[in-house]
Amino acid sequence: MIGDKWTLLIVRELLSGSTRFNELQRGLGNISPTLLTKRLNAMNATGLLLKKRIPGQRGYEYFPTKACEELFPVIEQIGIWGMHWARSQLSEEDFDLELLMLYLEKSIQPEQLVGKQTVIKFNFKDVDKFNEWWIVVNGNNVDVCVHDPRREIDIYFNVGVRTMCELWMGDITYKKAMQAGKLEMLGSKLLIQNVEEWLKPSIFAGVQPASEII
Image (cartoon, rainbow, N blue to C red; front, side, top):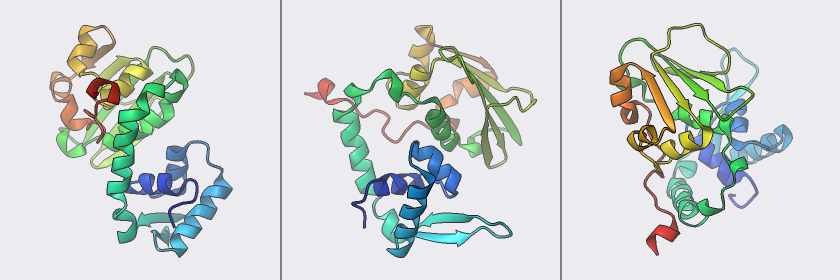
């Protein structure tokens, strides 16, 4: 049931809150639509997910079943293992901006924000194309966009892709990144002071690489 290529990664995406086909595909990167459809149908047949038609639309949504949810400790331990033993092999190509923004979107905690709408702008200084990204929070709805939503910006992040990944992974603190000149945050002082409350770090934040433990 879980041994086929991509299946555990699909489980990871389902457990992180992805329900739509395009959300799953974004989180998985280079999986083909045909193979993703095949895996989703197989997982539906074996009881790892529930496939439901979107009301009034042609597409489907996919939800984790109890059997799927019980795989969370497995996913978590594989992630911890990767943080221990595989992170030293990361190259610059592994710091994927689109994937980073997907996970930042999922990390926003709307209940920690004040007011009906919050707009966050990221300026990635080490990217030539699509170096400007926005996260717009309306109530409990969180959306990422690469085109200017033409809303008032509440907070700006001027940062590099690798540094933003390291911040989200807990490898560096916001304070140290700013002191080192790797990060500049502008805008609401409250949002800057409470950034780790409304922008939740990865569940693997703080897991040390094996080289620092042994």
